[in-house]
Length: 127
Image (tube, rainbow, N blue to C red):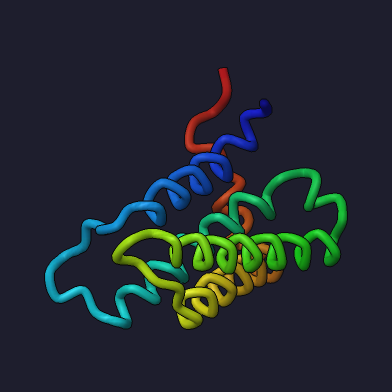
């Protein structure tokens, strides 16, 4: 496994584990908007971790659309899977937030050179 693949795998595994739990730890008063923001952010992070992989970078716009479709499909499958978990249910709005998070993340990465440079700058110099 290449090091580049670590973040997407960790995010997917975390989502899989959390969405399979009957109760998700959340602050009291957890309301609609915070839930959608969380979906937007987590699936945006997943899309960002994928769009940075060379396999998608080499494909140009086709790779960008592939990432958006993959993340959106995973969000839909994750919602469907939740419907089999006691105490959880499938919600169309969550899938929309997942897809919009992926779309926004890919658009920012591809369309904003400053953001892309920030993400691609190593935190420390390799030794």
